Amino acid sequence: MADVAEYLAGTKPFDAAYAIGTLAFVNLHRSLPALRNSLRPDAPVILSLLHTDLHGVGPPTEVARTSR
Image (tube, rainbow, N blue to C red; front, side, top):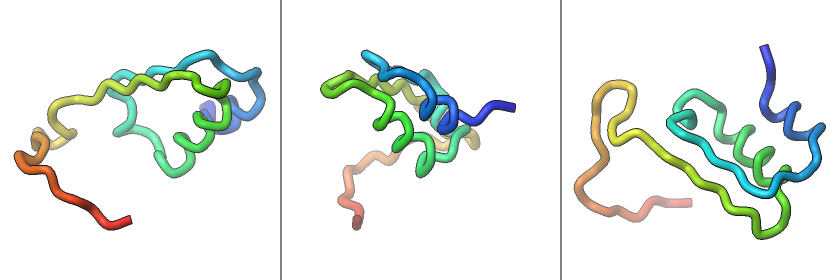
């Protein structure tokens, strides 16, 4: 089994990155910083997410501010 953070740490910087429906299956606190660090400056990141989560629940109908 491969670890994406370890793989990204050992590669040359990428010109762009995209993910299609995969973010629900990775540890975002580990994977996204590793992805950020593996990109060239100003490289685009394209994320395509499912309309529903794994339980069939869709996105909220209202925009709400979250605490940071």
